[in-house]
Length: 103
Ligand code: FES
Image (cartoon, rainbow, N blue to C red; front, side, top):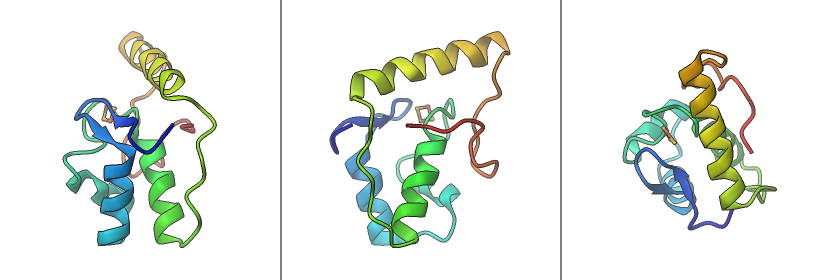
C-alpha cells in the first residue's frame, strides 16, 4: 500500500491521513484514531491496521512498509465483509486488538 491508498474504505481515509494524524496527536490509545474522520468506526475492517500504525508510531518504531498492494487490501476487505455478513467471522473493533491480523 502506498501512503495515498485508502486505508479506511467506510470513510475514504488514506493511510497518509491516519499516519499524519497519529504523528501529530500521538493518541494514547488506538481507539482515539476514530477522531481521524471516524477511522475504524464503520465495518471494522481497518481496525487491526489502525492499531498497528498506532503501535508503530506511538511506540517510536518505524512504520513498516506494507506487503500487500492496495488492490489486495481492498479484496481482503471484501472477503472480510462477506465473512462478517455470513457470521463466520467476528467484526473487528477497537479494544479487542482486532480479531485477525491486518496486512
Ligand atoms: S474500512 Fe474502516 S471501518 Fe470499514
